[in-house]
Length: 415
Image (tube, rainbow, N blue to C red; front, top):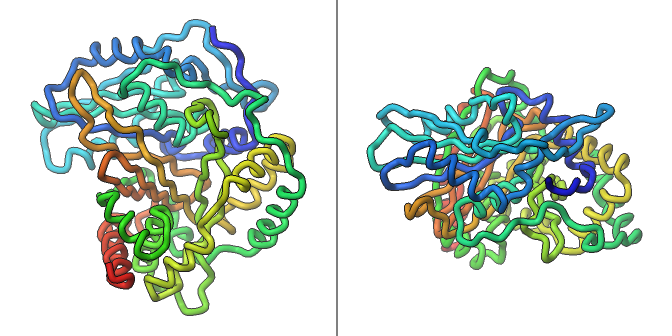
């Protein structure tokens, strides 16, 4: 049996709480992998998952509660085969759209509720998909991507479970005080009024997507002196501006997004258990009509440093109750309107010799946000997904609006 890991962090406890309040299986996140080739049997997938389970020790753990607080508990009789399921998808148009809608709503069995792998097939004789879903309180997005890489990538090395105490960054009180002194007054200001947030949630979530070449984002970033992530956020701000145009008079406040930032220390980037995130509150300048100025604004505000990551991690470790209170304060719906993520999925993945042709992120929709925007990169291509449980404005418009905003940004930067 694996050794008991460290206790859940304030971020883990916070996400466990908001996940319990989530609707429609929204507390799960994961990745959908597409393949060309004859679909395997579900028994073959079960055998593969059982064979590779030692590489991913987090799978032996489950989420439980002790004295009303979340805890991680190692299972006595861990059976990875029980976590593999099958989804038959009949022939028809847009198979990826249909399977993502099904996967987003599928419940987990009571005896295997923390994570699962789905074999999806039936829509074509030479295509199939494998989907990994995991409870967000057990793993964050980077942990999930690392687990997928271990499951379908080369090598057989076991991933680290947790960050050992001697690898944790030391607390530097001056840096922590300076960071909080800047963040707390900024977080006191409410986010913009946003029409989607005032609409009632629907019964089901929807997922809409678009694709973009990673090099296209990098080229634009080099031309504008921006990072790939800042380009992605600027295109997202432009799309949201066009999505609810009545919300953006010249005096409009920024629309604040929660952007997770990985805080794993150097050498422990593949740690898989728990949520190793700094919570960044990024102002999206949706009220700015000029695409170039939107990007320039995000170059100033959507940036971080290794020192900030370390200070945030150390502060959450030594101030657990205060840390949880700050997270609730920063990311309540009055101050943060949506979530945006950006994750690179490990390359070179295969199953029985069939290479992964595309990877689509399935991020969680938490915090009662009306929208989650996620960028996941695999090889030369990235997928941008828009997950929502609101219908007004129509989320189906967002992929085209995002592409249009990206083109406008390229024209403004002469790319």
